[in-house]
Each structure stands twice: as C-alpha cells, then as structure tokens.
Image (tube, rainbow, N blue to C red; front, side, top):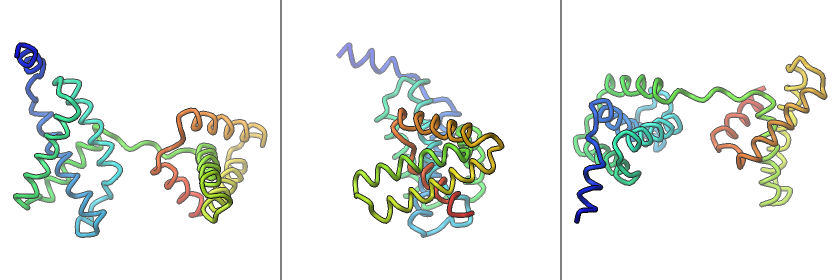
Length: 195
C-alpha cells in the first residue's frame, strides 16, 4: 500500500499547457484519421505523420514533466479522442490553433538532401531484393536511387568522388541507424520520381 501511495505522490498534476497539448493531440488524431479514411478534413494539411510526431513529442514531455507512464499518457490521449468522438464537435479554428501549436512543438523534419535520399533508397532496394528477390519493387527502388545519385553528382558542385563519398557516408549512417523511416523513403522516392 505504501508503494502505491509513493507512486501516486511521484505523479505531478498536468499543467494547463500539458492539458492543451494533450487536447490538441487528441483533436489532430481524429482529423488525421478522417483524412486517412477520406471522410473529411481534406482542406487541412495532411496530419498523419506530423500529428504522430507531435503526439510523440507531447507524450514524452508529459511523461518527463509529470512522472506518468507511457500507458497513462496514452490513456489521457484516448480519453480525449473519445470525448471528441462523443461530442462530434471539432471546430476549424481549434484545429488551426492546434496545428500552429504542433508546428512549434514538433517542427517538420528538414527535407533530406540528394545524397541521403540516394543512400536510403539504395538501402531500401537492397532490403526489398533480399526479401523478395529481384522483384519489380526492388528494381524500381534501385532505379530511383540511381536517379538521385546522378542528380547529386550533377547538382552537388563537387567532384564525382566527393559526391560518392558523401553518399557512402550517408548510406553507412543510415545503415547504422537501422535504415530510414517509411515517410523519409516515400519522400525521397517522390523526389526522384518528380524529376
């Protein structure tokens, strides 16, 4: 019993900023879900990835600041989602205000450079080839990696050897980190396909 009392005492109350941020995470989760299901909010920037990043940043901050567990913070967010679902009312000005908060608390990651994109698409091509053999997907990724490597050489301004050294360093760093996120891979693939 005394352990539970000590544990309860270790959890500090939420600040008004925590409450507002958790409310925004819950609200943006509903908007992102509607966007993914194509049932609304298509006039708002896509929130699936940025909203997830924001939820992670806020969740970590609340855990650190209040002593709550990951599960307790998740439960707070889910209660917020349930509350919005029950009321059925999410106002556009509130969504806009939450997006503004999100952009400050969890700014978008910068677009990776051409050498990084070439490196991670090359790694992705190898992973797909290892898993599926020389499939269409593996070939497509390898082609996109080659396009980006060529563009990096042309636009890089350095010698071919310098650009290739940069690509290889990015490749080693990405491999050491366990690869790249699906979002980064998709962004790089779109970047290669766009040109």
